[in-house]
Length: 113
Length: 111
Image: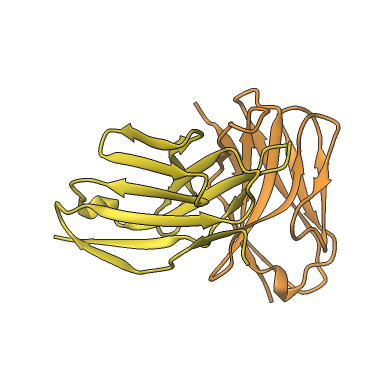
């Protein structure tokens, strides 16, 4: 049972480069999320998709775009990477509804130099 | 006031003791409360969740919720060195079910 799969696990970018973080879940969940985690800041929501075909901004969306490709896949794109985007990125999924816990992927450690 | 607050720790307890982790939240409309454990370099994993006032027990873990005081806690009985991790409190916000996380409390269980 794979759960939530993120690729890549590690990435180093130069300032201004672009990249896409991939996420796929096999739990038939409706909702998917992208969080970033920084020391001393905790987990912060970047974007989420409540269902296939919809996306919404979270707490820290600037500098990012997302695509809900289908029910399984939710990608996060950095168009022009900045050192401030150095972080660990987590994708998560959940059933719809207030009482549904998040299931996290293993994370992507991104360094922007 | 931050939406979800936790003492960052570290909280150090001896093996076999009870560890008490606390969390306060600001949104009185929050309905669901979650505790996650995160080992260093790993992703958060769900320990348990609670929706109703009172206590909820699952093995060595007990979650306690007091909505009037906007307070949720996690008790870990018979703490083991393997419980050493950062514990994240999360509270739902909005109709979409988005979770807001506290910054976490680092727990260290000493043998």
